[in-house]
Structure formats: structure tokens, C-alpha cells
Image 1 (cartoon, rainbow, N blue to C red):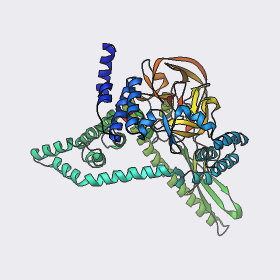
Image 2 (cartoon, rainbow, N blue to C red; image 1 turned 90 degrees about the horizontal axis):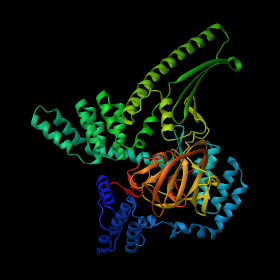
Image 3 (cartoon, helix red, strand yellow; image 1 turned 60 degrees about the vertical axis):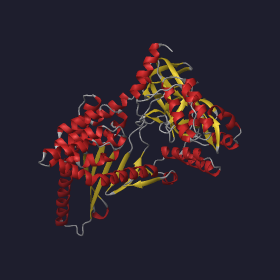
Image 4 (cartoon, helix red, strand yellow; image 1 turned 90 degrees about the vertical axis):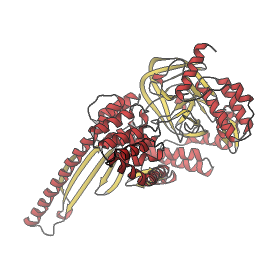
Length: 582
């Protein structure tokens, strides 16, 4: 290895907070046979991946598996997945699939069902009867793509209805767990935080200094709710201290708290400070939630018409748009007149006029609040991401799509309310589009398959970017993007073409858009790092993608490199799938 390469690796290791040790010393050192040793070996192997040391990586992983044969992370990173209690090498999936009669029967009969909600429902039932659970949920998901209000499909997929909207049970549980954890942490810190705040108020400089030192010594993430909800509300100076203390934590809980403070703090300086702290973080960890809080002004329209039996019906419609859907409220009042005289009609008209005035006052008040919140969110985003734009939701939504190379397909669904009762949700959500060129090979349960031929129900090799788990996951939707500029990524094991915004996993960095890939970067492959030789813009062509259940990933190309599916990626602190930064 050259002196330059050695120096570069040392500097990179220092930046990442990692310690490189000699592979020979790892292999030679006597170790007890347990999972803790295997865990250390796996982490060291993944550290080698960041620097492109494929041989050392493989040797360390083999060592870990020999010491702890059933240690899952070692097996996953060696390219194995567990199927029916047995470890199978990803390369051997086609041979295994060829012996699976149920899978063969499914692939044959799938062609007999049309892309209608009714036929997809029947196909889901066929899969259920034969124990093909992954394919079953793929076709139930397709039912919802075609018929979003299909309650039976929603129920089988674990959705529940909350305030008129369908919510996945696991999302509901995760939200409840997050809320409960935050409340528990707040309760745990409440008394101590109140004492420290009282110390900051004390007239004695000695006691104020002691309280400040105790606050600055806080190094537990569990203190974030108390810092945000207690210290940050005490005074402007206390809020500034709270922002600095929260910012020392890299976890998502801290990022969420900074995002809230950048919008909700009553002090301009604090909102600015919190936004500046966000600017050093992965934009995926805060931009999506902030954009989702933007709304267009509420518009209204009203009409009066005659009903049967002399009834007069007054209808008032309100509409606004969020990032992912529109919201429409249709309020109706029916006036049933006991008599046909002018006095009854006059009372109805007076009541109607008063109702209209009150509702329009409410709309004006809501729009004023929306405008204020939009302004604050956009101000924070300008500081955090360095974009100078007007506080207009559409401008920011469009910027985000363009920034990520996303083409949005389809119309926004609309939640419609009549009175206080929601009656319909129409249409699937618009689909973001980051795609791969035709001919790109996707590694599936039956071998390579061109991406343009992928179908709902196909099983692809996927990897959990947080745990590193390898598993077969079903395709639940396929997409096509109109003609767009491509990037050709040339690697040591072949080339891949994709749209400019398509994310690939770069070892040591996480998800990186195709347009930002550079020579020398190491892509994460199913069996090890794959070095990029070059990345260049090429022609404009139609591209393809899909949505994969659970992990939202799949492997592409001869090198089987990790690619993201057609959903917005989530922020991650992992350097390699299954290896968080320490």
C-alpha cells in the first residue's frame, strides 16, 4: 500500500471515529467463542469495507462465523439469508427456487389475473390458501393501489382507521411507543430539571454557575424532552442553552426537537439558532417532516339550493392542500320550514348569513395562522438547507422534488369530510420517481430479472439498512418515469444506469444520489465493497423502479450493489448497513 493511501485511510478513520487494527492481529489473537467476539469481528470487517479492503473483510467475517456459526450479522454480510430455518447463500437462490413447487405454480398462475382490484383480491386469496404470505400482501397492496378504500384489504394488511384516515398498525404502535418514551423521559427528568432551572434563576452567582455546570454536563439522550419542553421555555437565554445541549446528540429524537424549536420557539434568535444546528445534519432527518407541516391557504365556496318538500340547503365547501394530499370539508345545513310563510324564510336566511359570516371569520383566522407557520417553517428551511425562496408551500415542495430528482406521478388524494364525518379518500398517493434504466438487472428469488419486467409479487433480495439483515421481500408496486437524464455508474464489476436522483449505498456515507457519486467511492455490495471507477451523465431515457415491502431496498447489477426503492429514503446514522457510527 502506498504512503498516500495509508495516510488517507488513517485520516478517514479518524474522521469516522473508527480504529483500524491489523487484520493479522485480529486473526492471531486468541478469542473466547461467543457472540461478543463475533460482533467485534463483524464491526471490524465492515470498517474494512469502508476502505475497500474486500479480502480482509471476507476473512474477518469468515472468522466470526467459524466462532459463532449462527451469528446472524456475520452471515448476512457474507451474503447469506435465512429461509425456513436454513442459511442460504444469495447466489444460490435460483437453484432453491427451482425446487419450490408453490413458487413455480404462483409465477404461472399470476399471469391469468388482470390488474383489477377484484382479480388482485382473488390472487391474494390464492396465495393465502397456499401459504405464500409475502406474495399475498403484495397483491393486497395492489388492491389498495386500485381501490384505496377497500376495507377488507386494509384490515388484512393491518390498517386501522384513526380520525378518518387509514393508519398502519405498526406505525400506530411506533408512534405510541415514541410518545410514551418521551413522556416517561420527561417525567424522569422533570424534578431535576426544575431544580436546575431554579438554580439558574437564583440571585447567587455561585448557585447559578453550579446549575449551569450541571446542565452542561448532561450527556443522556433521555434528557432531550425536558430540555425542549422545560428549559427552552424558561427564557431566551435558557432556550439558547437548551438548543446547544440538544444539538450535542446525533439521534433522531434530538433532530426532531431542534426542528420543532426552529419553528415553535417564541424567540427569533432561538429559531435561527436551532435551524443553524439542523444545517449540519442529514437533510432527510428533518426536511420531510417540515415540508409536511406546510399548507396552502384554505379556500371556500358556498351555494344554496332547494331541496324536496320546501327545504332549503346551504352548502359551504372548504379546501386546502398539504404536501401529500388535499383536504376538503363540505358542511351542509338543511332548513326544514314548518310553514311556507315569509317569516320562516326570513329566519332561515338570517341564520344562514350569520353562519356564513362565522365560518368565513374562522377561515380567515385559520389562514392567518397557516401563513405564520408557513413563514416560520420556510425561514427555518432557508437557514438549514441554504435555499432562498418565498414562503410558498408549492415552491418548497417542488424544490424538494427537483433536489432529489423526483418526478411525482398521479394526483394528490383528497380527504373529504361532510359535516364531522369523513366519507371518502380517493386515489393512491402520488408516487415519487427515482429510477433505473431498462435492462438493469435486479437480483430476485429466481435470479436476475430486468427491472422493466419486474411485477407485483416478485421476491427480491433486500437488506435492512439499520440492522444489515438480508431477506427476500415482495415487490408491492412498479413504476415508470418519463424520459430523464441518466447517470452511468461504472464499477470494477460492470456499469449501472439510473436517474440522477436515484440513491445507492456508499460504504462509510450511507445513501448517495447517483449524480453525487464519485470515482473511488465504495458501493455496498451483497458480498462486499464495489469500487466506482467513474460516474458520468449520459443520454435521456425512460426509467423504471418499484416499491419493496419493509426494507425498501434491492440489489442491482452484476455486482449486486444496494439500491433504494421508489420511496423517500429515511435518515440513517449507519456507515454500512448494520453498522452505526459510534
